[in-house]
Image (cartoon, rainbow, N blue to C red; front, side):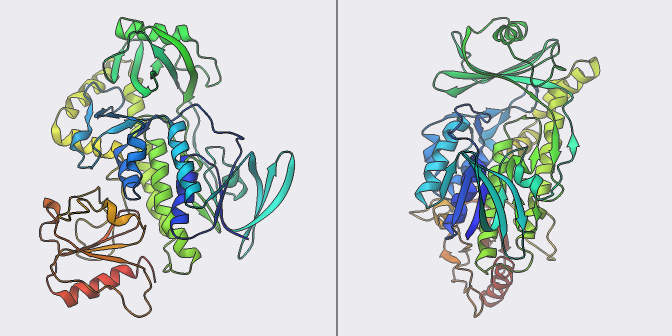
Length: 490
């Protein structure tokens, strides 16, 4: 019997498989496609995702293959978001095709011991008290696989979600945009956005001499997602909004996409969980979809592993749903707002876009939304502990340390275990009989201003701060630390 069966070998399923293997969990990924898809739905890797990959020592593998982009967009606002302000080690969006991301993640998952089986798809499942029986179809034949847990990372039409009886309520498509991956004879010098009576247009390089053009045309906004997109339509939009055709030729992919918006009302049904597009879908504004799913997998991996191995306290796995559904709701909310700016046509709507563009010129507002689009500051349920430190629940984001071989905390997290940083000058004892958390304890000094007065900080495997203290008494600090640890593992 398998420990975990994952449906879907996209970025989310592959990353979840690797995270589970980090804790010694036996995991198999099944993927309906017989071969990787060369097209790239996602072409932007946000700073928050790079930060997550850095905690496992993988960020450079992506950076060496992509193109750093220092700014981003919020809808069709004319003021761009400045990613240099987000406080990350890699303060940029990385232009990188999803096909490349999947290749790197599959290599990583296989290297750490995951199995990836292509040309196989889940068609049904039945839950029992201790396992899930899953029927898998491959090459026209069916077989039954038993697994202790099943995770659906198999997209918006998730067979796992449907078989588990998890709903997917929301809004159907009411308007469509389009994308075109093409070569340009007359490319812009950098990412470009434009708006006007004809609609909106974004242009950005995605590598190998290819640019992605993404637009919303007022003349075609109500066409169906299945209607063919022509190269001439793309050229007309470029000429209308930019005054030049960009020399568009050699299309790699032409497609329409809609604004259908849905979210599962629960991310867990018994021994079945969903993550990524199987749990949420929305208009692809700001390059947030894949990045949100990667954070789903990062949150779920260590919690599911601890549950499998009997190390999880009561309620730990349920916190996956409690934490990730609000994060997705926040993205759904901002993508709807972005679509309103993209589709602005009336004088009132155009005025709204101009007002928002002016608001983003204010540095604090720009930084706030740069961080959110970059994948930081997603909401967590409010903590119940009185007097919790303001850092509690926030992302570590590679904050600086004064350690020769670890200038940030990222290298200290490659193991995927809870990390206790003792900044108070006295080693904080963390272990206690009956508490098996495999916690790594490190004595450090910290140079970043955010650590001022902090004497100890406990970091979850997903780089969330679980607990921080300003107490200078070692015994009280140790007791508080053990209490915090008991909420992560036992």
